[in-house]
Image 1 (spheres, one colour):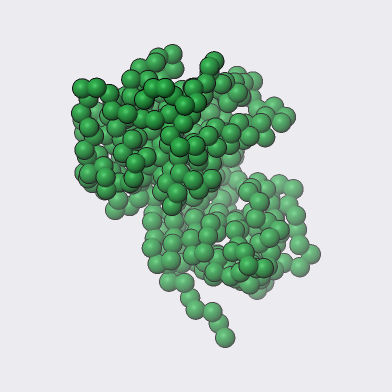
Image 2: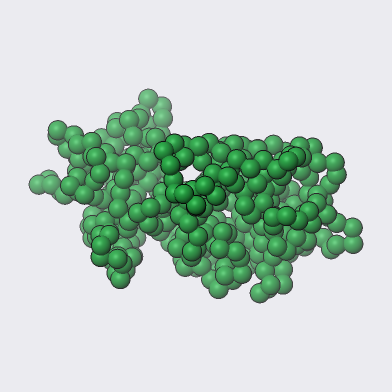
Length: 377
């Protein structure tokens, strides 16, 4: 008896086909993009991924990544002697071997239709990737550049809800290039290694599931202390510069052997500090200044009441709302800090997985909250 069909797979397939066709247009012909998927292939891969996400293997939900790529295009592919059918049960059984980050199951055509031929750790840019994040939760994405580990999320499917990521609005250009990489990975002109850092910090903050608040302040100024209660529980002196040094070295010399692992460890160490009650403070050069710091309203400064809230998805629009409707005490503290420190930015990870960036908006003359969790899955 055939399994039931996942309606969202068909609903999104042609839109994704058009997206991947547009994405490859006008690109450098010397660096060929991944194969262009048609609607039928997209529908089949998304459908199989969804039903696989609802399976259990020894009590665990599958976490897998499917890449639409022939083995001939893969770098150092691990090829199965007998390809597996693209089915939910086969994917769930294979999941324990491929759940580590960076491993993709290769999917390609054969005589029977689509099958899983093996695994690969590298995929070309604009190669269709469907990632199973959790039960009923899928992300469709592709790599942005060959020299970056960063992926660009195209759509998020959760049950019958479909979120298609939209281009950022004009208000995004108010922020520094470093922060724009969180909202759109193709907006920044800085190095690929530096681009990845803030994104990886955000992802790591969400990963510990404790919630966290990260304040990013300008270098060589103590103005941020006006909005922090004294004494700071865990002030750092002198500033801890391991992450800053690794980013600078990568920009000047290029990545060296072992530098990727060291960078990841440094990022996770900073993100881990955000689990401590209070806020973690770093500079825009990634120097650690404090953690466990309490945000307080400066004397004579108004209390933040409302924010403009946006989400970079189609139909997301903008909403002016009470700051208390956005989230709990971390969100209120982040918005208050962004209102007072208008050249700083506050990032908030909620325990439920939501992620919001707060920054002052000259365009609207109030704090702007960017809902970003759809970009970080």
